[in-house]
Length: 318
Image (cartoon, rainbow, N blue to C red; front, side, top):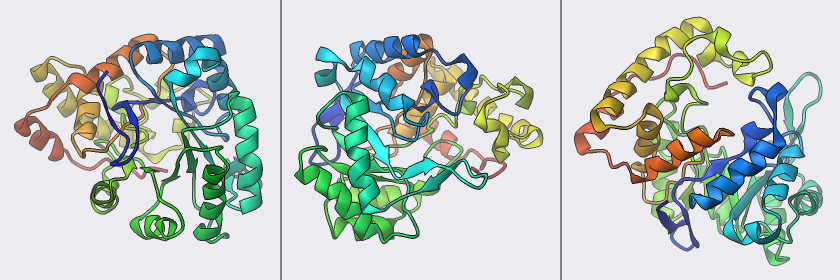
C-alpha cells in the first residue's frame, strides 16, 4: 500500500483507508459478524491500510467497540484511528439527530476513548454541523480535545467552504470528510479545490457509491431487508435501472485497463487531488484486497476524461 502525507502538515497514512460503518450499521445488519470484522481490520493493517474510520453513532456505539477490539495491544500503534461525534440516535421517527453542544462533545470523546480502548484518537471529526449550535462553539469543544491530548487533530464532515472557514478561525482543520464518487461529484465544485489549496486532507466517504459502482447490485430486490439503501432514491428500481448505465461504462474502462470496476472507481477518486484519501467500507476479505489494489492503478488522461464524461446519477443522495 502506498503512503502519503495526511494533508500538507499531517503524518503519513495509507492513501486508501477502511471505513468501518457497515460492520455494525446500515448494511445487512442481521448478518453482522464481529469476529470476522476484527479479522478484516487486522488484514487491512497487514496490507498497509492504516487509516481506520469509525464513529460513535455507528451501531450506535458498537462500531467503536469492534474497532477497539481489533486495535487492542500492538495493533493500535499500526493504525491512524479516526472517529466522529455529533450525531445521536434519532427521535420522532428520525434515524439520527444532530447534537453539537460543547458539553456533548466533551462527554462523547471520553466515551469514545473508552470504547476504543485507547487514550487518544488520531483524528476526531464533527460528523454533522448542528444548525442549532454555532459551529464555533462545537469546534471549540473539539479543539479542547486536542489541547487535552485526547485527539491529535480534528476534522469536519459534510460541510461547505464557509463552514470550513468559520472552523479554521477557531482551530486548524485537518480534514474534511464529504461524499465523493463517480456518481456524487458535488465536492469537485468548491470544497475539494479549497481543501487542496489549504493543505487539508479530504476523505471521500462512499467512494464506491455505497457499493453500486462495484457492479455487484443490479436490482432493488437484491438488497437485504434491513439495508438502509432501500430507502435511498438512487436505489429505487427505476432509478437503479437508469444508473446501471454508469456501471456499464465503468466496466468498459475496467476491462481495458485490466482492473475491476471498484478499482477504477477508487483510482478516479484518488486522481482528484493530492490529499484525497478515500475510505471504502467492507467486511469481506476479498473486497478489502481488491480495494487496496486500487492504490497502484494509474489511469491515463484518456481514461480519466472518459470517466469525467459519465452522466449524473439518477435520484438524490438521500
